[in-house]
Image (cartoon, rainbow over all chains, first blue to last red):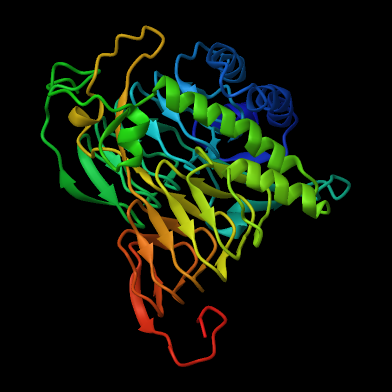
Length: 210
Length: 208
């Protein structure tokens, strides 16, 4: 039976989607003015910034994000009462979910979007009249950042990764695989260096919360 | 005895402090306005760029050149000698960031003075009395010093409290977690000394 799903549906299902695609392109183009409006909202007007970010992601937002930020779609982001510092890149070709009480450092890149590794699977011919005359495969997986996670400056998190609550990721790390809760991880690829005690925290008075 | 110092005073002393804080937020917001003015000044208008840079860091920097965009936290804790800083660098100056003479900084370099407790139970400490601030994060900031003749490759990240010694080169993409001695080549995450550099070779970094 032929697969009748659109490229966008395949993208969100975590399967290879082929771009350029009119539906995906129009979602990204519609996001650009909302992104520009947010980035240009004065840094000291917290209420206006939260409102502009809420418009960007299409859902309520009570955290703090500093400009500039760059996103892929915007609408696949969900962010709690969390602080995001300047110059982050959230490539939300699939869902990126960030909990409460996180501290996201400068220049952090959350990259839900990836590609098939072999060029034969990454690039296919399109109509020769198309511009460009080839199509690229996008393979995007969800990213989940639990509550009270601290991500150091310049960290890169790849698609499909979950970082458990209360964990810390050292600056400049590349997180290729999921990190359990209450871990301290660093390096490229990031490895768990030690595990923290489960204690009552600000957002989780019950240390046995998952 | 309770600590009567402001969060700003604690921050600059290298002691634990809490953010968000009204005084610190006002400083950051004011810096954002000066930062935008600097970043938007045409590269061809040399005097205007120098004036905008000196306004951003609040002091004279007659021999520093920085490409836009350049991002700071406060701006006023940065001191620049005779140096070149390429595009999209982030200087998170919650404590002093001092660059000497003949310093080259590649694109996307991040100098990060601010840090937090690793234990999340210690990171979110205080239930604040200010209803507009949903929670506060325990922080600490330690100075970063880049001595004369240092070259930081593209994308290097330097962590709080680090001093990079005279004439040292740090390879692209490195994460410098501990201070580096003078005249070495260091690289990696974490950055490690790969070899010594020749101190006797002529160098513009050396003082006669």
